[in-house]
Structures are given as structure tokens and as C-alpha cells.
Length: 158
Image 1 (cartoon, rainbow, N blue to C red):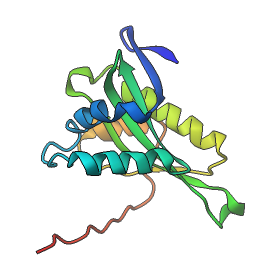
Image 2: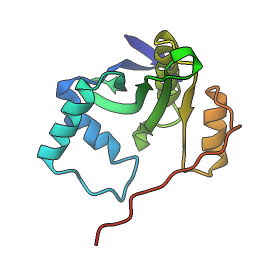
Image 3: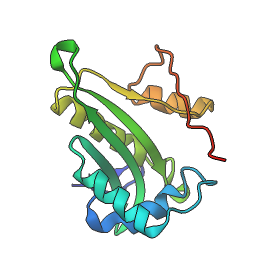
């Protein structure tokens, strides 16, 4: 589906497919600059797992063959809320040269609409950012900051 976003940029928004790994890996470099590059075999294996995982999808905004923004959506089956699933959004990233054009907003709206289509009762998103502009962005996408999030990270291996 082609879509004009903020300022008339034409992008195509679609789920990631098998041939998209190289452009996605290049895009992910704009998310966590300190992350070392994945070994190619591991990247291919993980990407194949993601594509095969029921309820998991990566939505990508493409300008030509170039991924300019992406969002990962995970739909989790549930035994509460009358069996209604819930969804998580992760890895929201836009290429540095393509920010402030509405790409991430369009992808988040696509992910939320997909979650509603799959009868999720809520969509959750965490951000490590404290930047007012980032927090305002998520609020403007419809999220409320009314819960307390916690995380624990695996300790570094010696």
C-alpha cells in the first residue's frame, strides 16, 4: 500500500518479507548506535524465526527498496480478559535522514490497527527515552503514560 506521508513523501508500508533483511539491518543501525553488527548467519536465523513466529510481524515503510522506518508488533495469546490477546510494540526506528516525516506514526497506527483486528484488548510500548519530544510523539500516537514499567536485563557474561 503506497502512502503519502507528511510533506508528500511516497512510501510503501508493508510487513517485512524474506528479502528485506539487509535493508532492515542497515535501518536498525539508527536505533542503537553502539550495538555490534549481528553475525550474518545469526541475523538470517533470527529473521527467519521472526517471519515464522505466529503473531509477530515487522511493519516497514519503504522509499523504493530502502527501509526508512520500522515497527515490530508482537501479539500475545492470553488467558485473562476473556482470552483477549494483548500486543507489544518494540524497535520503533526511523532512519536519521527520514525523521519528522510521519513514517513512524503511520507504522504505529498500522500496528495498532492490526492489534485491534486481532482482537487485542491493549497495546503496550516501552521507551527508554526521557526526551520530551519522544514522549509527546507517543502520546500523540494515542498512548497514555498511566502505568509503571519495569524491566530486568540479563547480566553481562564474564
